[in-house]
Amino acid sequence: MDSKQLFRLFNSKYHVTNWHNEDGEPAQSESEVTWRYCGVGEEFRVKTADWIINKLFEDDEVYLCIGSNKSALVPKSTLTDEIGKVLHKKEVGVMNKALTKMLFFNSYGTFKSGVIRDFPESRPRPVGSPLKVAIHANIVDQRTSGIADIIGKYLTNLEEMLCNDYGGEMEHLWIDLELLENSKSYSFRFQKRVAIPTSYTEFYAYNVGHYSVRPDFDVLMKLSSEDEICSYILDLLYESTSVLVHKEKKIGDFDAHRFRADFSVACKDISQK
View 1 (tube, one colour):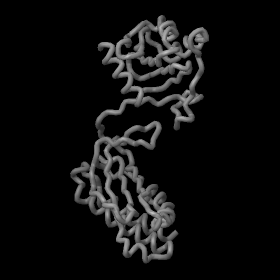
View 2 (view 1 turned 90 degrees about the vertical axis):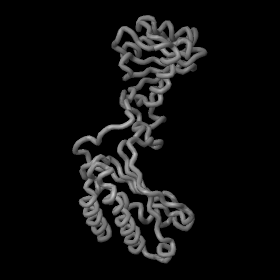
View 3 (view 1 turned 180 degrees about the horizontal axis):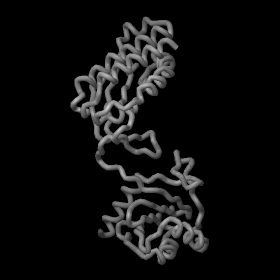
């Protein structure tokens, strides 16, 4: 590939890299990423650069990515010298030929290392993997924020109790409980890949079923006790899952009837605690 293609590839891989923490493990947040100092110009630490390059890369050749007109496959033995020449004015990226490891130097003379992840456009659900249910009640206003607080702890228990293998293609089921009176609910959709902006390490979720539920606010706002609110919301959520029965074939023969039976039992258990 030419220099422009390689630099474009580097930029795309940069955004799917899990950066290392102090222990060489994937950092779980930006604050955990370990940056090490190597200096620039006359203060450039050749031994430090050599150390990380030889530690991270085993191949004799690596991809050096400096810009759209200056990116190429180069001998690893010349890499430290090439980085030292430009680091005071350019950012530098280095990748192995297998595109599994990355080293990034910024123009201030610090660097970080990481593992490049592979996120295909689609994938089959891993056989035997449990369904991951997530029920969110974060679409609120001043009148309903207290209701979200009440129901939140019950939803966590419900999610855990529904973590079972129901077959089919669906890996994730996301249900949004919309507690904003002027909002509009949206119908069930099944997506092969969905970006997860809240995760620092898992950039995509696969095989995601997603829909929202909107309560009857005339009914909801008349409820006063925690038990009444919990019972109403759980019943509402359970009834909403009937959509999965009609979508069974679309989500690969997902066992919606067993899921709904488990949902009903879980709701009763939660209500009695």
